[in-house]
Length: 143
Image (cartoon, rainbow, N blue to C red; front, side, top):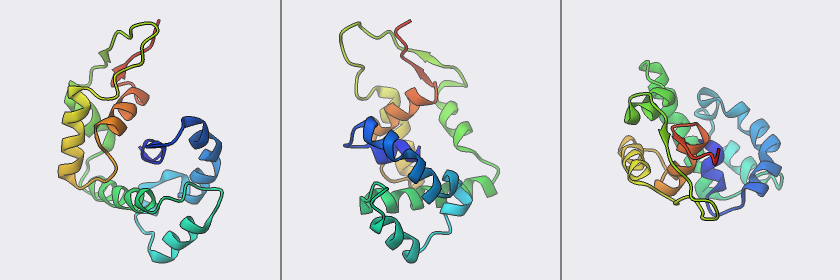
C-alpha cells in the first residue's frame, strides 16, 4: 500500500528505483514502527534525496501506518479488509489487448470510500485500483 501511495502521479520505474531506500527508511514498511514516526523522522524523510520527498505522501504513509497499527491491536488486518469486498475471491478483469486497464472501477471506488471513512490518506480510487491489482483482488493478467 505504501508504494501505491508513493507512486501516485509518478512512474513505477521511479518508485522501483527508490524502493530499497524506501523500504529501509520506512522500517520495512512495518506499520507498528512507522506509526511511531514523529516530526523528527518526517524532517529526515523529507531531506533524503534517495526517497520520494512529497510531504503529503510522507505524512499519509505515517497516518495510514497509525490506522493499521490500531487495526492490528483490535485484531483486524489490511488483508481482511481488502478481501472482504469480494468475499475472498479474486475478480477476473478481461483486459482488451492494446488498450490500457481502466484507472478505476466501481470496486476501487467502493474500497477507496471505505479507506477514506477509516481515515486513510492518499487512497483514492485510482491508487486503490492499482493496489487491488497488485495484491490480486483484481486479476487483470493478459493470459
